[in-house]
Length: 248
Image (cartoon, rainbow, N blue to C red; front, side):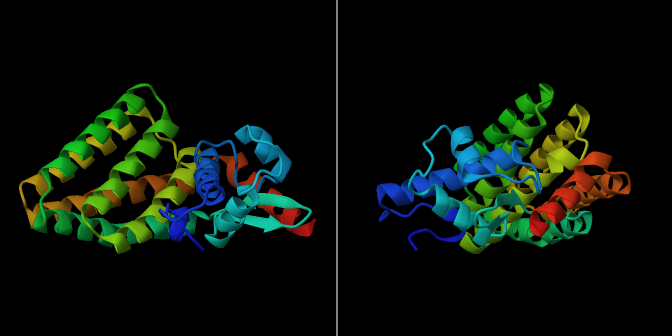
């Protein structure tokens, strides 16, 4: 295997390997943007058409196998594939676990300050803010996730990246469709992220950790409020379709 966790690029890749990784991320984007919804059955033919490539394109089937291995989809020969549903309890646990990882990233950035990393992070938040002001939840979620993952890379913590990235992908996959994010909530998130960056830039360990906990608590509260009254069609439809796919 010439790719590591989450289909990362490796210089020794062949063109087929490269397309496999590209398709992997294109499919994840389809999921995060809501074109592939949890438990809806898809065929390889339908996927190829959506991606604008010929059926049986080399690497496409391998990309699906990688997504199945990473737990993003279920796959059954001659039946198709579908995005793995995720329960509210699992999403809440995922959000709580993030807190320790994000705090470690902040402390690493304070121990090894990088003006360039912080400048790039602020630029990413500016882009996220433009999405928020336009009411683009999917664009906001994607960019805000990139903000966190890129900071993990800047912290020179490969383990944090390997842990955080699949978490952020799953939160992107499910939260925009299940959590009501209005413009005020998105702008509040960006404001919190900027305060967090300010603490890191001041090399203030205590403030950075406190802000990390505050941000994670706020995100968890939003999930809990949404889970108390989830949109009726999303979870139930996903559960029904998942059961139907398994029975096929």
